[in-house]
Amino acid sequence: MQAGKSMAIDELKDKFAELSLTLQGIKSVILLCHDNPDPDALASMLALRYLLSRHFHIRSTLTYGGEIGRAENKAMARVLAIPVHSLESLRLHKRANFALVDTQPAARNHSLPEGAKVLLVFDHHPPKKPLRGVFNHICPELGATSTLMFEYLREAKLEIDWHMATALAYALISETQDLGREARREDIQAYQKLIPKARLRILSSIKYPILEHDYFQTLSRALNQTYYYKNIVVTRLGRVNSTDMIHQMADLFLRFERRSWSLCIGWNSDFILLSMRSANTRARCGRMIQKLVKGKGSAGGHDMVAGGKVNCQGLAEKEKVRIEELLITRFLSALGHERNLQLLVPIIDQKPPYGSPS
Image: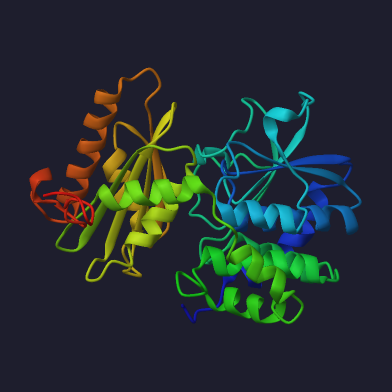
C-alpha cells in the first residue's frame, strides 16, 4: 500500500465538470472493456452505466470481446445480473460513441471496431499513447478502475445500493488480491465504505463458485507442466479453452515457496498468451513482459501484474512451441539467468501413479 495522496482523486471535481461538458448532447454510449473481462472491468462498467443513466440521463450498453471464462467472473455476472453482452452479438451503428473502461484505445487488448469514435476512457493502467478519447481519466496510481468509478458516483451524489456495493467490493478484492497487491489508500478506503452495504453471502458465493470439470483438467495439466529455477516458476499450459486459466495459474504458482516471479503461457487459435506475476512491489512486470514479446507481440501491465500476447494464427503447434521457448529463455535472461531451458526443474516428480507397477 502506498500512503501518498492520489492526484487523480484530488482533481475529480475538475474532471467531473469536463465529463459533463463532453456528454452534452449525447444520447447513448456503448461501454466496452478489455477482452475476457475481469471483475474490475465488469464492476466499473456497471458503475459507469449507473452514472450515465441516473446523473446524465444517457442510455448505455455494457459489452466485451472474447469470453467471460473464469468461474468467479461467470458467477459475478450471473448472481448480480450484470447486463453485459458480447460485442459480436450487437448490431452497431457506424457513428456509435464508445466508452473504454479498464482499458485504452492503444492497449490492443480489446475489440474496439476499427475507426470507432472513442468518447470516454476510464482506466487505472499506465497511459498508452495515443489516448484518442475525447475525455480521458487514467489513474495508474490507483489499484483498480472500480475505485475511480466509485469516486465518480460519490461526486455525483448517487446512492450506492447493495447491488452496486457488492459488485465494486468484489472487484476491489479481486483486482488487488484482498487489498494485498498494489492496493493504494484510496482503494482501501473505497472498500471500507462499500463493504457495510454489500451482501456478504452473495460476495462469498461469487468468491467461491462451483468449479467445472475443465478447471480441474487444466489444473492437472498445469501441475505437470510447471517448472522452477531459483526465483522463478514457469507454467506451460499449451492449448487452453479459457484464457482466464492462464491468469489463474500465474497467480497460483506465485505462491510456490521461495519464488518471486511467475510466468504462465498458453495459447488458443489466434494468440500465444502470457501472464506474469511478481511478489516484488517494485518488480515492474509491465516493462519486463514487454522485453519478452519485443518484436513478436504486445504487452503491458503494472509493477506486480502484467499480460501479453503474440499472434499465432496459421502457425503449426511446433512453431508455437518454439515461440514459447524463446519467451521463456528471454524471461530467464531478463532476470539474470542463463538462457537455457535445461535449467528448469519440474515442480512435480514424474513418478508412476500410486499402485501402478514400477
